[in-house]
Amino acid sequence: MPNDRVKRLRQALEEQGLEAILIGSAHNRRYVSGFTGSSGMVLVTSSESYLLTDFRYRMQAPQQAAGFQIVEHGPSPIEDVRELLRQNNLTKLAFEQEHVVYSEYAAWSKALAGVALQPAAGIVERLRMIKDAAELQIMQEAADLADHTFGHVQQLIRTGVRETDIALEMEVYMRSRGATSSSFDTIVASGERSALPHGVASDRVIGANEFVKLDFGAYYNGYCSDLTRTVVVGKPSEKHREIYNIVLEAQLHALAHIKPGMSGREADALARDIITKYGYGDQFGHGTGHGLGMEIHEAPRLSKLSDTILTPGMTVTVEPGIYVPGFGGVRIEDDIVITDTGIKILTSSPKELITLG
Image (tube, rainbow, N blue to C red; front, side, top):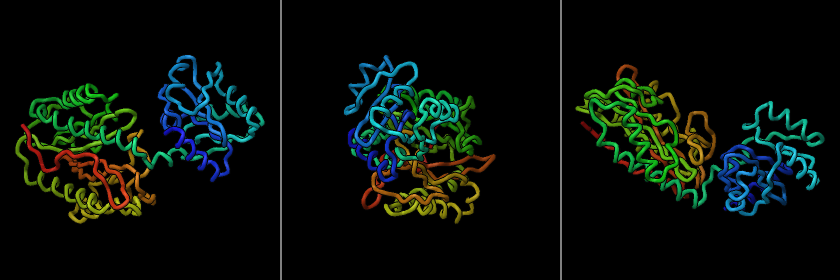
């Protein structure tokens, strides 16, 4: 797999007229090389691929980075890069402009005198948008773990329990079943706090007859899942049911109609138009979804501003919501893969309104 990714990266470099690229960002480095260590750089040219890392990884790197020449760098890795460029007669070097801070760029410019540094935007990220079969298998397993976590934690959700206690139980459950960690800081938001789209778990104690929104995921074998479900503790009011049913209608409609060839903007409108029709458009202030994979938020986006065309192999969330200040909010989210004819839904937790406690 890493060799195939290097091949596609070389094709992308050639299309942009670039001779070589230096990759230092952790996710892109791992994607291209398979190396999971915490430190290192990848240098890919038209004919060679190098992984530069330090003494700590002299045994790990050859085992993981198939097809790469492993270089154990000295105190200044960029000096080793300079030597490799000299050996390959290269005078131009692309770098990840989104991941290199100015001080680093200045140091590289000095160390690589005579080499033209070329900023390059999103070359590896665009490759990462299309998942291969191995990636999709891992993401399915991460989604399954999120589903199992939701089923498990329902027994804990009741009046008198703190949001943080629920979040902790979810974290322990996921990690005890293979997750490295949660995909992000777990959101457990109850009562009025459920109107906070990113209401990370607090010390608030869950009360009676209120929403509890759970947004979480498992970071598993290098990939993320992302699941949101909203439940009611106690007896739901008509307002609870109204908001919940609108969000559910919007989410199901989007899932039924998203397809390849559609833009992110068009996919976003599938859910947004329904919520707006019921008068809650102003209470739905975020995009309908986002890409996910090695990172919890990556390209493409399902939003009013996205012209990206959905393509088979892309993995995105579908997560419309309504957030009413002073009352509460609902979000329902699933992870999906764009297929040749439509979508495949990775997450499978039930979506009818669940009442607990």
